[in-house]
Length: 75
Image 1 (cartoon, helix red, strand yellow):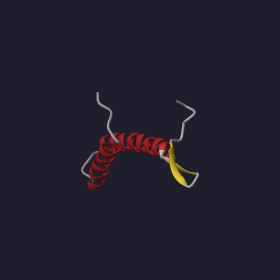
Image 2 (image 1 turned 30 degrees about the horizontal axis):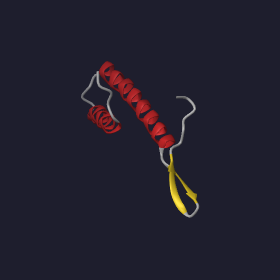
Image 3 (image 1 turned 90 degrees about the vertical axis):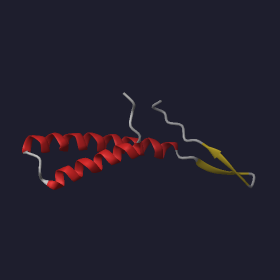
């Protein structure tokens, strides 16, 4: 199974929110959709945190900008 990217996950989350807002689902379906939405939201948050850590850090060195990647200790 292919892992979804951030944009795909956000689209899926928006679809779930729309389904929940319509109010057409019964209680059990609503709870399942809510749980699924929370799982996706947690995954999106994790993706954002990883992206933030990988953002290029610009260092000024001898008057020129040099790119350096943040190295995550957990990897």
